[in-house]
Image (cartoon, rainbow, N blue to C red):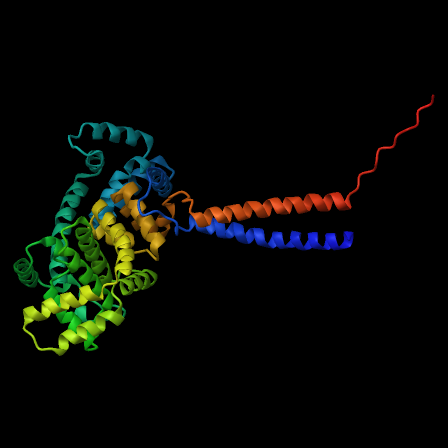
Length: 432
């Protein structure tokens, strides 16, 4: 009986030794992988991420006080040369973490004297004064140029019938660059855009007429990107909605479309968004509906209306709800920064967890998040600290790990007591 009991205890002991690391690894993965991120980050998560960002900016600056200013000066000038105003402003806001103590005291004193409502604006203005005059002029020129470039790019994106939109972005010949257009061409496109859309929020999405033309080419087998096609449809359908969700879909769709056409989405995130869009608008429902539309002769206006109805009828409500959860994150990133800055933040994303990390960075740092991503790349996403979200599955994992630990402790004590016998205390006879 003792041998059988000992054998069973050995089996249980060895099993627990194997099982406990597995449960512990699963618990840690569930707690910190980001799969349990909440859609809206908590105040604690934002504050912790902000502190992590401060430490990251301090770590990239040289230790020598004399080199700190030169490094900061050069990095701001670099972003201005690249015409990235958001990143340049982010490094201006990071000046308290990147400069020496004396410069930080001067900076804080200068910012107190700036008459602006927002604290970030006061700090950025004071930091800009610490740079040479030519850098300040370059910053103003970059701001103006960024505004013109954004408008020109949006106008170009409206022309959905060009060859760049027809080409599948997964191939080498993906998109055309706005910089290839001459000044007169940009002016013509801008005027055409003004005539076709009164609301500049929708300029990146085009119109339902553009969507109908590209949908027909897609049905015929032309190389039209289905991701861009469905993103456009989601945005245009949202533009007709009077609620806030529709407006958010428009902004998020514009950001996604810009990132897709600029080839600034990772293959992993491209696959993720393709699956999300296919769940929201399944090809099995969309293609037959569009084929029925284009098989019948109709006027342009009637065909456009039928294409709109085809997309709306093909929408899967459950899939659309999942997609809109991601669009909310992208829209929030764009609102906290800007469209070009949002594209920079989502450039390194791979999955849903990374998307929520990028949103948390934007919540904690605004333009500083753009500067950090420009400096550290995808590693910047890892400083987003959401804490642990105690889901039911995670609690079961922890409970299982605790039970396994207690069982292991019991087996160890039982084994010790069975195999190690303490000598009995002898009782000496006493004389009478």
